[in-house]
Length: 360
Ligand SMILES: Cc1cc2nc3c(=O)[nH]c(=O)nc-3n(C[C@H](O)[C@H](O)[C@H](O)COP(=O)(O)OP(=O)(O)OC[C@H]3O[C@@H](n4cnc5c(N)ncnc54)[C@H](O)[C@@H]3O)c2cc1C
Image 1: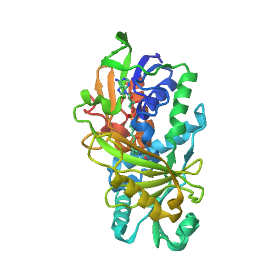
Image 2: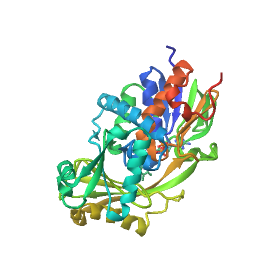
Image 3: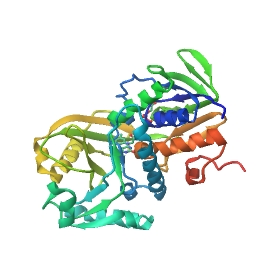
Image 4: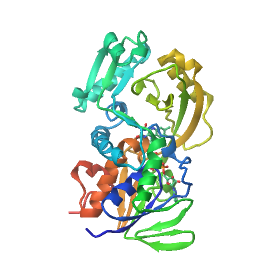
């Protein structure tokens, strides 16, 4: 196959998975990122990294679950091949609710059944719940177990993706803002460069050219304690947004996230912090003594239908709108784009990702 020169703009999870997938097809990648290599400035840095296709059905369309199942399989294949170790686990998700939020749990179970994934759902009695998560003993009378689901740690994944790209010969241009982009060309550092393909993965910054892109604000915190031991992510039903408590290496627990219709990046509010902390405390009182090690805010790049979108304009592809599913869906979106570049074919499974029907 003819190797193309491809520019990828944006080193969030969308751009990095895209660059990796295309590099593995033999193309020459130049990655442009306006931020530094620490990658601690963007939405992807803040994401919780939940890979929970079935749990997401409480809000998301069935496509997200179907795509998520395929993408989870891709992650399992990709992670062992990366240059540095990445924390990823696939122990399923346990869903619990306080009495007043039980209707939400019932609703989720119905949505999972309705979407045809009933075999991946199990109602748990008190004793079965204890077997799965002994430390939650006596706190909840029942639970839902969804499997296979998992989580991946962005803090080890993002640097590992960068290192893998570097070791395999990609040109990495950090602290390089792309000032202008068009089919087959970009301008950076006041210099125009041409490529066979240009991939715009700028997240919310692309709203200058994707006018229906908006931000949905999310606040998330990280706690540290050696008093709590959870084996898997816990989804706490919450009346306003899906809340996960995700155990991470180093006795850390990620608790998030809020979901607010706003593109404001002002610091987290007291109300949001209280809601997140109350959820953690309600799950396990030992969180009362945990250290708060992070409280972060970012805005999810979101399109009106809450689905990702690929827009083609000649040899420019815009890949955006990953919303609350950047980690869950990015490998599948990347594979869809790579198949298109290789074969000029849009895989049927992900046809709905494209903004316009395939030409006949
Ligand atoms: C609180 C929170 C929790 C979340 N939890 C989850 C979760 O559990 N699971 C999940 O799947 N998803 C989750 N998400 C969603 C996920 O994080 C996003 O979908 C994802 O990060 C979007 O990635 P992106 O690469 O499209 O955008 P970004 O991460 O924003 O990356 C875009 C990059 O483009 C760069 N850029 C922009 N303009 C230019 C330019 N002109 N030149 C060069 N570079 C440029 C930016 O600097 C940035 O690095 C969460 C999000 C939030 C906020």
